[in-house]
Image: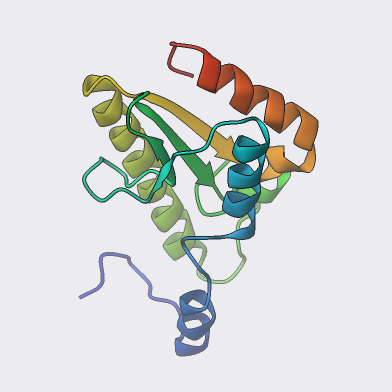
Length: 143
């Protein structure tokens, strides 16, 4: 039995299976910005860290998550949009994603890691996103 009250149709499942969870365009863009700022030497999708951060700087203990606004329930226009079909399924799924994200960030913080979440919508303004990444990498505070 599914963990969700309603399961998506086989067609929707096929479409969702084609959506990548790693090496997405937003994630590749963040990596490009980090390299341009002079921050190389990161590791990708470390399974030994809570939440498998998209980008991890092991020596600096910095973890960066690049979240899609819809999938992680961001408060922006893209994230606030809820599908009209199977709304209970989607709201439950997104709520579980948000809960998991919060737990993983807290676990990383307990381990002494600094965590940054970059939202997909933030990448529309590359200068601001670059400034935010630079400030995070140069700071010693959790953001």
